[in-house]
Image (cartoon, rainbow, N blue to C red; front, side, top):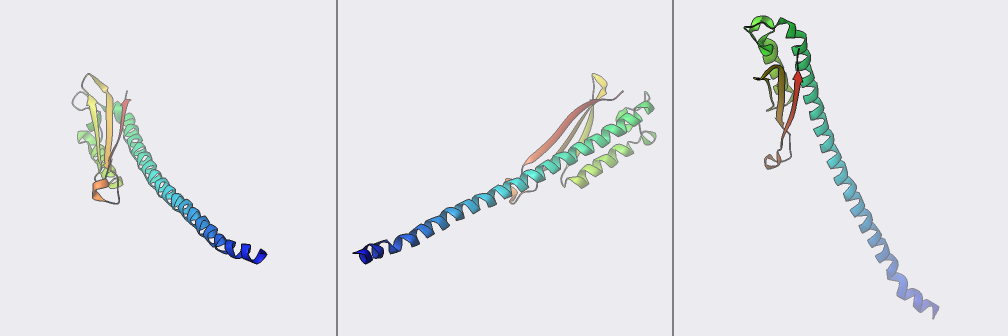
Length: 143
């Protein structure tokens, strides 16, 4: 009688092990997906930090050059004899940091001390259809 009940339960251990492996596999797949999302978020945060740093570089340049402004030249062309070399160098730094990126600084017509800075870029993606456009915008008063 004892032998007969052991024979009936012989296959249950195998099924339990297979179900445990299946549950474990789903858990591992979930962790892999979570890791991929974490990497994407880390890259996005790095891009935003780089945009903030480039914006800060332009603001520092504008603040340092703001005393050079005369009536014939605004803040964006005040450096280097009025030919805006620093500004164009900054724009090329933006394009180098972000392939396809664009940096633009504009003066507010109603308040010439207010500078609006915008950096836009397209984040790298696995497929061309999945690309997303990002932007970093700020306003600063330079006096």
